Image 1 (cartoon, rainbow, N blue to C red):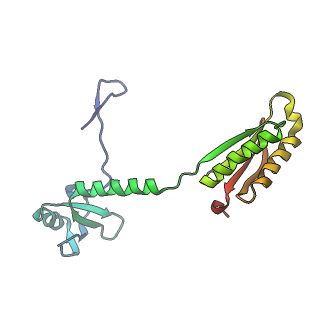
Image 2: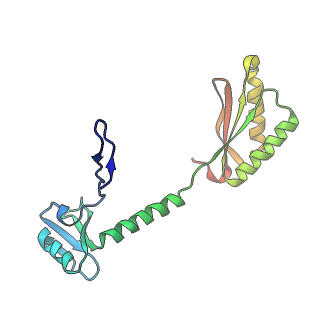
Image 3: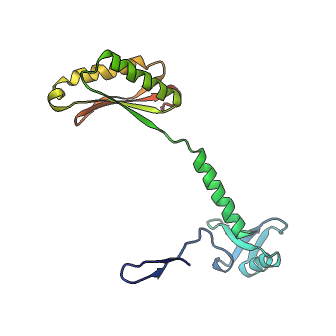
Length: 187
């Protein structure tokens, strides 16, 4: 048991909660028992624990909401290891959406525009979303229409690679547009 510094005292024991109930922690009268080399059936909790002990394994409550609850006769530490492995695998397969930002000013010249357009093309080919924004500094907020025209020009230049997820919108001193690669647009 790990010790942890308490709010007022030197140390208090930290209790680690187990995700599954095992053996004597199962508090129901009857359970359905499953497992390898086990006769599947409904048993009293004492009989089920005896069956698990006879093969030197643990009785683990797999489905507590079933009627009667389902318990499996397995090695609990091996079972926990496999569950962690499955969770890690699912986490690694989950697709993480990356949003790349490109910044413009209302007075962006054509060369800079082309340069940033090339970067946006690379980002979209990688599968990343692109958030392009025009940042208005000081009194340049007067030129809101320039920013909107610039962002719409940017979106039309990339229309073969991307779809507009969100049209140009002003938030504070920034007007932004969000583009997603064509294969991953939600409907």
